[in-house]
Image: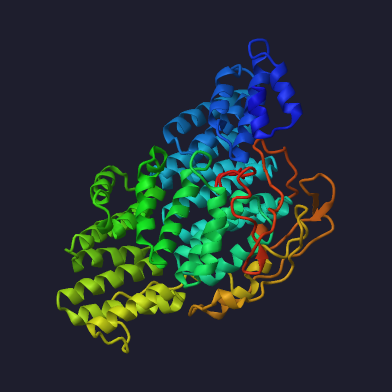
Length: 581
């Protein structure tokens, strides 16, 4: 046991405590220490976390008051891996234990975990009321960590179901709760990433860029920073900024790795890195990435993050003799949950036929509306480009031109240079006119409620909060435009009422609370996003670790800010970027 403590770099106090406790004589204390060790292993990116947590749950006496918290910690880790069936069983047991112990906080967390797990299997609408009930419990006891956990889980399942506006709103409320609790640096990146994911999917790339850049300025822990950089790098890649995308990928590769990171972090990174390799003309690297990932059992347990990899694999399958069969076999067994995965399955089917040389216009014409209904202009643009290729090959120039014009319209709004280049190349080769407006396949309109106006967005719910956790800097003004971002303003048809900025938040002397260090008083932000709460948010300490590492050593800059040395954080990794309570 002592060698393990030394390897993980844990404090001597914990090592001594573990060595001194006999699980037979004091199983409750042993279980608590195992729980803490499991949390620390997860936070540091070390293996063995789930084994410690399973053992803690196994030896914890049934009547022990801390048993619900041990079960909740295990559930949380199981759902992050993910091991959904086991996680649902443990969450159900945690609810019973919490009710028996009269622990409202543990019951709220357990109910959130159970609803979250069931919602991911496709039962979203029936689980949203349960998430709301869990949130009400957390509010009733003024527990910010449990409250933010409900927002994070709700935003995540809404995002997975393609309900981006609702997901962004839930994540925004989580950010507001983090700000009020003085935990913006520890918990803010999780909620900011959920907001940014919704914005990226729906084509609001300028807004997502601002949110990501300011979240990075809060010096988040390395795991959160890595995932934020993957999102930021994906925008840069689509807009043709390869150096910026490369720096983001390098940092993320230094943090996430198989064996210590979860599929929900690694699979998006692998897709991003493979797209980057394709943009640089390195198709062999993209093929290798897909093949190596599919060979790992832990990679094929989550359809939400595996379907994008299958689509990517289908695009490059012609370069590998073994890949097409492996992809078809896996896709035939992989569940399809919700409209996003349905659109990905349609794209995979159409892409597979295209690689075989039998691309059909009808297949791509099913894909484009599917992405359009989800308000994903970039994915719709890609599908329309493929549809135009199929129409041109079939000799239908009018159909090809119509689809290509709509694809260019989407790419123009997004500033997606790579997509624009492919569109213009096809137009030249097929001699298709792109001067007149498109006749079909209109791109989805802007969701005006997804984000507030640019001039007020950040100051409303993220940046003008009074000092939160002690960080290196304080940010109190809207972001300055950077030339490297290539901002493109999307057209808006919002009415003056829709576009009117919300009133600025105000601070009263009576609404103040201490920060998470337990010392300095902080003004509580009161604004449009705060209407759900009343009173202060002082409550019990979170049962899971809200771990924030120091800012990494500076070696190079990302869009004008310190990023850190690639690989330097491997000994101090944060929890999964979207799993922190």
